[in-house]
Length: 169
Length: 414
Image 1: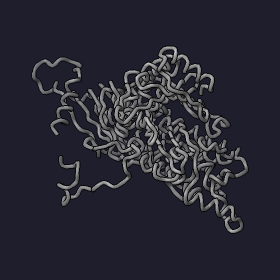
Image 2 (image 1 turned 90 degrees about the vertical axis):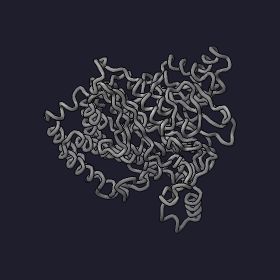
Image 3 (image 1 turned 45 degrees about the vertical axis):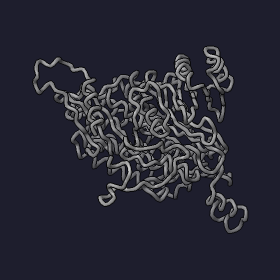
Image 4 (image 1 turned 90 degrees about the horizontal axis):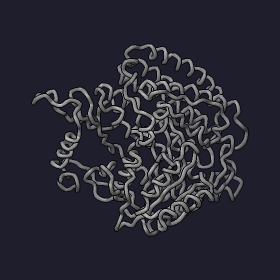
């Protein structure tokens, strides 16, 4: 992990390239996180990649309900040579859930970004194949959002075939 | 339905043929077929849309989600200690690893110190689980290659591991043995000796598997120089674990960023050379021996002391205290009804599972239930390597390669 000072130095470099890029940094439990504006996500990812964080370990979606902006996308970047991790984070609103896709930088972002789209409804601009991945194609809503209720789903039988929503369309 | 059909056609048209069709002959036509979801060789409920030119695979698209059970959503509705049995059911072959990733993340948030004995007990169980997972992989893969006897032998040894799990925790699978702050119970008397006997026997058995497979012409023909993916492609796809090590990159979190006192043990990281299916087989096979070595060292150096943290705000008090101590009774009541509260924040805890980097992201909002639990499951990410590994190979090699990629669909779909 970069220490708190190292994190600030990285943030400073990102700010030097684009004054509005970095919205905040946090160093929590030895983990470094940089929050960037959604529009600056791609440039920041490219800059971090040039610094040696060449491996995208994972991509998480999160709903910060009731805080605003609600949706968050986290990229865990890894520097394998120095065994160093940094989290790149962008937050978007429900009304305008657009972040640039990082699929062309890391082809491995394909499935994780599709999962975040499926579960939270974050739209990744420039993603080559942005479809649902875990939920059925005709599913409505984004189930990992905090205001999506936990509950049952009607089970399809022959007697209720015409009444169960979403199956016979 | 018509929209779906045209998608397939689009996929067909996006593929460039290796040879220009000489005429309107049938043999040059592309054919898109559906493999799965209930095909026996897909190791779970995986559907592959395969575009073929004759017998040659030109493109593969995995379609997943058939066993999605919403575990991450369920976890948000449960106190932290009740999340452990739920996350264990994601990747059903590496349940100790799932529990370890989650417990480690929560311990990071709570800043709880895990006692040394608990860490060693965790390592022993994790490595036993790694052996068990590799045995299932080896057995099922060999069935795909047409060798059924290896499957029987592997499952015989797997039973021995499951018996050990049953003895230490009462369950054979999904044991809920790891708790936040340590493990649920100390190992029973005689267990260590049985584990030693097992590791000794396991080495002999692994030699026997090698004797069965290594000089088997069919196995060699099926595995050598098939499913090759180079290291850079794998890194770009985010692939970790034995698949990356088979391509020559010795990345292993147990060595690179030791957790759970893995730095106390002396073990090697097997690596391959070219990243074909044979290397994948050799790497996992060699890892069985290394796991045995780690288990023996952990048993030799097993420290005395508590097996779970003494922090009563996190771990249940010992049973005998409940009859004599009012405070213990209150702690017990609070832990069982509400659970412990976790300070707000978000952490990511990566560990090395049998399939690669298994990371658990936990966000806490200060209550006794997690606000978000997300698993970076290695199978989910590694599945993206299916297309580069099988493109332009025969469809028979697709089956072998898929087996050697070792995706566990419970982990993919969660």
